Image (cartoon, rainbow, N blue to C red; front, side, top):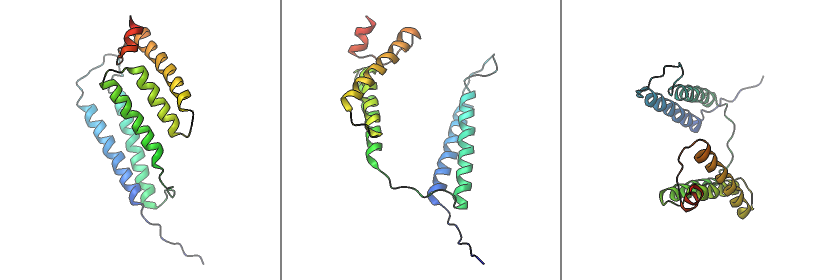
Length: 159
């Protein structure tokens, strides 16, 4: 006869479930306060509803798995990729704030994210990010006529 060892409740999994449910509730509440109406059926409230319901489903599923002890064992945390990505986002925000421009900000974010995933060609990634940022900027600014944060380079392109 085999004896079962009782599974332990995964406290971190429960915390993650609570955060997911809280985020779902926050998005739902924010969507409910929108004073928009659509004459065509689906309006701007549709996607927040989908995201909120999806997060709630994930939260409930995570809570059930945590209570049953069915979540996989977590690996040790490597902070370097997290710091690189958050650093890239901080540089992007600073570039936008101080009018450096969208294209250089995108290049830095792309290179930092690639480095976070283990790529070691930072200069090459800056060039790739610059090209991607330029294409995105041209698509948004010229084709869609939407405005993105402008710096000296974007003003030169727009002239």
